[in-house]
Length: 246
Image 1 (cartoon, rainbow, N blue to C red):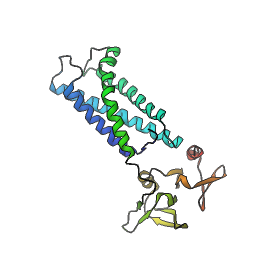
Image 2 (cartoon, one colour):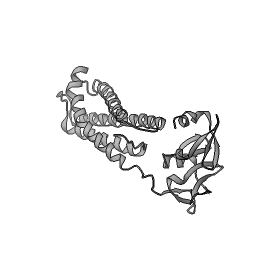
Image 3 (tube, helix red, strand yellow):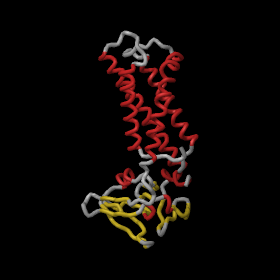
């Protein structure tokens, strides 16, 4: 897998599906049965394992997003590292849960690993691979039209992602700088940088008041200023490392 969908929204859905599957698996298959747990207890146990699977996947989603934004690329080795980290997190936390007073499991770690975790890995891995592979298809095509909406009904701009240069904060508005048939233009929309950054994850924040489309990055003017297509913008120290990786 050489591409990645970094969207936290999509991976939260994947995590929820994994959690739901884990609940069904634990409740109906009951991979361990010590003869001391009634139906109500199995419900608590299944919910616990479901939450552990969901939380573990969310944590690796944050990890992969950070790595992807830092390197601006993905690789098979990084993809494998996601699976490894997920299973390490899941194994440790689920074993601690297994040994808690709620379950009071009788397996030691070695037996838990061979009896429970290995079987879980064999079942989980194809499912995780499938949903992550499908998530790639949800990545917006580069030539699609994006729609930037503001709070007012008339605040709307439809452009190609490649034509969007940058977005700057302007009091209660944001000013969008873009190309229209190769002409440099701007438009004010009542919105916030935070909302736009969450809607369009290909943008990069370089300053508390500025977002840029990295494809329009040209060069460094000086250590605190960059040159974009038809525009220069300041860069704050907090966001400088991300730009240096471009």
